[in-house]
Length: 458
Image (cartoon, rainbow, N blue to C red; front, side, top):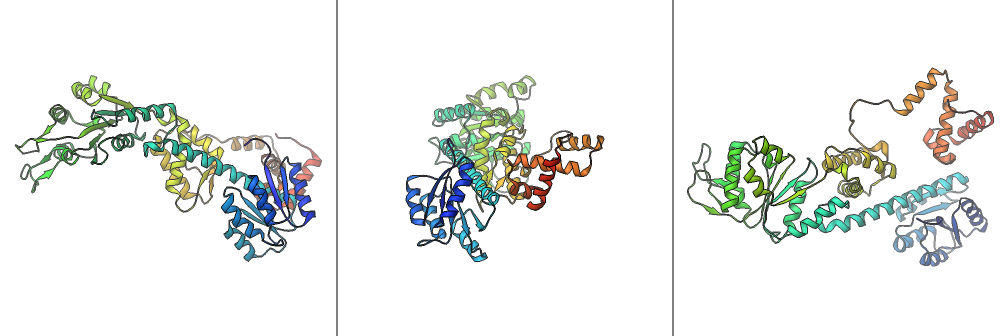
């Protein structure tokens, strides 16, 4: 946002309006005033305010009525309500109407400043959330496939080109990069979208059973084959057969798969009848198939049959600009009870993580963090990131060790921490007191004594 924050103060008490206008102008806000809910709505029609600060009891419509109208006209504008008649019922009514916060008069300047600051933080997070949604929507034309990095845009363009063909596609990339998602996207953006998409993990089925799964078998073909069974090639007729982890397929079955690709025919295990098949083949692997060929574990002729159209998905650590879009998608997927957000600091932390499990690991972390945190906005400390490597000594622990070596008294160390929290909150004593877990009077006394004595960090 450019320019100063815009706040609308609504109160029929002139002295209160002037007091609040003076407070926020000193902080660099652009302030407008209104004497009633109707006057406020006229101003809101022309200006989108960052925060509306309104009294509840006013002539005509109340502040709670104003909240209801603002939710309709300016749903992204938070409203902080004030009243000299604070009761539990009025607080409940305010929150039900959609107010962001509720404070009672008389109040200290720090209290109302803190409420407005919180409202601004929430508005900023919601705006960032909307930007991410727009980014998701821009790439949403590719179904489940998300990303806005140059690498992902190249994949989107390639998918659009090849979706309508029947050529074989080989998708490569590390585990968790979304190879099956790419395969599904190709299928559902092509002419075969109305036909079956049949996925099979070649490592999940024992080698002895995989041939039967792919080609089917007739009754009595082997022990336990009490009835005939259609294979996955036949089930994918007219659609797409996705063979995941093709690099783990045994050499014998590789040869049979090659014949199917050449002849477009299958013969069920134990059968004599040949069946024509029309299934597009998409394969995927996290292995280096060229290295596998050199080692004699993968057939070169099959490789060239499968990789008519090669698509490589880069690991997530090489395209961190895709992480915000993915995080937004995963937040929506795993936060059905209420909207959840990620703070800028937490997002920065997520973007700096190596993500060796790629998007799959990222979704796991987001889901776990949402489940274990009660906050609407996930902070760095809420992120359930895995520990990587030996535990390193935190900066705070190193500081404490240095203080102990110098023989710093506990009282002095507490004062230094109070100073640091005040710097972190920009001098906001109400917020600092909440972080420190002490009342404001104690904070004022300790901060005042520290200021009078002077001092510096060890």
